[in-house]
Image (tube, rainbow, N blue to C red):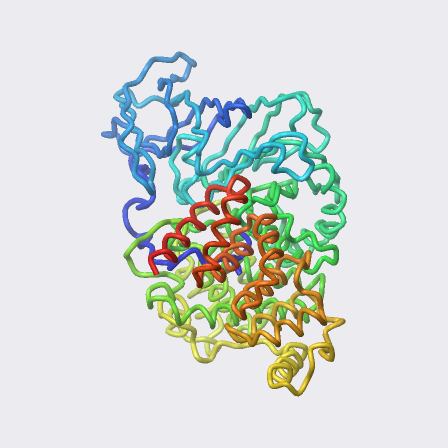
Amino acid sequence: MFPLRTLALGALLLPLAAYANDPYSYAQPDEVRVTHLDLTLKIDFPHRQLDGQATLTLDWKDPKATALTLDTRDLNIASVEAVDAKGKTSPLQYALAPRDKQLGSELTIQTPQRPHEVRIVYTTSPDASGLQWLPPAQTADKKQPFMFSQSESIHARSWVPLQDSPAIRFTYDAHVTAPQDARVAMSAPNNPKHPLNGDFSFNQTHPIPSYLLAIAAGDLAVKETGPRSAVYAEPSVVGKAAHEFEDTEKMIQTAEKLYGPYRWGRYDILVLPPSFPYGGMENPNMTFATPTVLVGDKSLVSLVAHELAHSWSGNLVTAASWRDIWLNEGVTTYVQGRITEALYGKRQADEEALLDIHTLQKEVGTLPANAQRLAPKPGGIDADDSLSDVAYNKGSWFLRTLEQRFGRDTFDNYLKGYFNHFAFQSITTEQMLDYLKPNLIDKYPGKMSWDEAREWVYDAGIPKNAPIPASPRFDAIDKERSAFLAGTLTADKLDAKGWNTQEWMYFLDGLPDVPPLDKMQALDAAWHLTGTPNAEIGMRWYVHAIAAGDKAAWPDAAEHMTRIGRLYLTMPVYAALSKTPDGLAFAEQVYAKAKDGYHPLTQQAVEALFAKASKK
């Protein structure tokens, strides 16, 4: 998933993967493990539901086991039956437990004969946490309804009954029927020339964890960007998206030179409607991306570099539990930087790394000590809260440190070997360290001690000797910002005409939390930040303008919040408004109008923020 500079949804306090089973799954993989999913789906837009049939191929591990336990959330189970090796079916007894708010409902199927396959017929809820259904009015072209999934972290169970844990990988086939004018895409190889006939089939031959199961359907046009890549988007968006992502093949080739062949065949990008709650989601073969990166100058295409990098770190080698998620996100953020540097230069890569570092430095001190660790000690909360800046930014900083200590060529060879060694496996932090010690730390003595490596992973905070990239451009911006705030440099004299998106982000990030109102008004008069179409700049600008007391910015802030459903770009503006009674009342009015266009995860986040603000 694209870094939540990504929004830190909460503190990372997840249980150790060494526990017998994933604490966020009811599955018992030591007894029986799902190895393949044969999925049949009918997309029902009017009723906002999927009519499904899931046939699970089972590998029985425990000869005494007589039950299959699956994860579900808000599924209506119609029937469960065993399927023998000859295809003969027989009904099975099952029980669906009461719904747990976080985990959903445990589905226990009695399997005394330990069948080869189990088939479940079901329908999803219109309120499934992993699906969003958009009416035509909430799409870009406003012609057809749209549906998409977001399975990470534990939301796949809301649209397929399965073992919903990153430690369990399976292959899948899918047959999906949809309205004749809708195109369906999934996290498997997609055919850009597939006719719109309402009948789609998919085959994912590589084993993937459940959170990488994805589907989308709607008014999608396709534009190829290379021999193995294409952009999927609504017709009015697809041309702009294809231009923004025209370097996709170059990115794939760059990553292959560094870390070995791209093993997934095609790499396509689906640009979702604005309600998509994240920057990007690394579904195999088909990255889901936010339209907020389509700014016309490729300044935010690091999102594609990040999601492509997941094809090695995350999809190929996967964290075995949400406690180990830094193995996905930290490694990916490092690889993203290497791709960005190769294609767009060291300046942009270093600036993006510095933005990550400053975000982490600002946040880390506000977190409990356990949440500051890459691999936290036991003590769990919601699995969605694993995606913090610590996983992304401290994790990538650790890898940049390893690169600096051991040298780029040596570290590249190590990382390439790591991906090959653990290909198509889910691993724990401890397995990664067991590979790191003999293959890097001990192999090249004197570069980094084992204690130092363990400090990065298991200690709170950031090691004192963590290297920080140099950026002359950022240094110059620091001086100009200081002079502007001190009154010795007027807003119109800032040397900002040539600033890229990252440099504007850095300038705004460095302003006081509550800047002087006159300074903000002067800055807006000179540079017209209110109403900017660049959502990264806009989010930062509105937060500071609201904090300064500039109510003139509120209507444009409301337009920003209504237009964009991406959590990271919307929640800070809601939070800034919610700090005063008048602002909270205004934010609630905005939300009442925008709510129906938000993803369920965004709705939950805004409503939780309002509840907290109201108590204060």
